[in-house]
Image 1 (cartoon, rainbow, N blue to C red):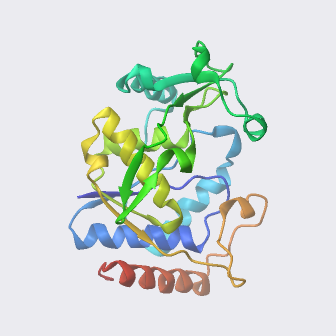
Image 2 (cartoon, helix red, strand yellow):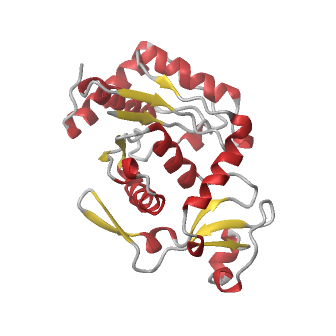
Length: 257
């Protein structure tokens, strides 16, 4: 049994992130497994060292045990790029479209058979209009949710969905616990993993918990804290994270130590 906590250091972690880390660690303890800490730092220009330092310090204060996943950053980009060959080539196409241009007109790049050139255009995975993946007893139409999804960005950075599936495959992850807001992403990851034969990801145990909301009832977001001061890791903050994690664990049927 292997699970993981995979934060992105694009801002200081909030209570919802940390409650998820606790729940994953409790699940690993209950099933006598292992939890990996995988810091998703592929988009390097967005991150600052203090965000990563806060991850380590907050997990220490919460008493979360983990095995740190430390890939070779020097070869990581080329490795993730090489793994694109595991996808049937007819499903991949180069795309020049930006987000703003897609708001104005539909993408026709797949029909133009462009050459993929990192730092010139992006690489997308074609999703048929009837591409469906099932998660939590519900069917998700992936084309409706994502369109033709980007696997490799124009700036020569692996997209989150691609790096996430490859890392989960390579780490042998068998259990994934996320918030409800990531159910569609889980459905997409199952689809991608099936295309590349990543059976452990395709057949993993997926659980999705409710979200920890702000006092105003809004979803918490790291991006809102990207320019803010870090939360104070005092007893009140730690106690609130524990209380939130206990609620989520009870919701999922995970034993609280």
